Amino acid sequence: MPVFVTQGRYTHDAIKGMVAKPEDRAEAVSKLCEQAGGKMLSYYVTLGEYDFLVVSEMPSAKEVSAVVITAAVGGGVTHLRTMQAMTTAEAKDAFAAAGGLAASFRPAGAS
Image (cartoon, helix red, strand yellow):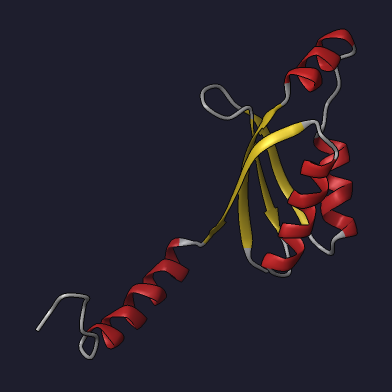
């Protein structure tokens, strides 16, 4: 199953609410992933530009998109970005496939 990495920020209201009543969001996010047919692998609160990072296995981009849209519409998170991740073995296969394609590809602006 494909692995996806999602980063996002909590809204001001979400942070205010969690300061007033601290909570661990991992259980809610895990349930949401399961309802969409996938599995949350890990949930991290992060420092820097983004407040959290979720790693999940989902059947496809459609299901992970549904999870992200559901989280966004709730209003507690913003600036969501999701990337598909691959193992180094999967990346090696992608590079091998690209090698086969590169020989017949003409880049933009090339003669």
